[in-house]
Image 1 (tube, rainbow, N blue to C red):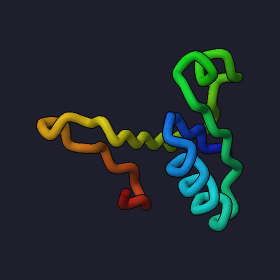
Image 2 (image 1 turned 30 degrees about the horizontal axis):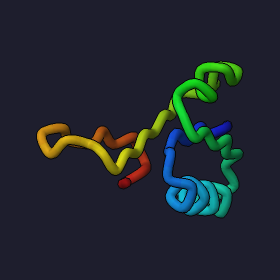
Image 3 (image 1 turned 180 degrees about the horizontal axis):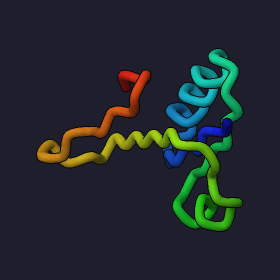
Length: 68
């Protein structure tokens, strides 16, 4: 299963990629939405998103098995 990361901060993108790769996931990093939409559609049932610009009124969604 591949995890698609969408993060414009290269340090965060690289850190998350290393974390997921440590747990044997394939990781595809995207710096912007355009590159994500140009990529092949992600397969699998788990999706995960992270943003440092999330408004305080929005609570992050948690996927089963991952506490982000």
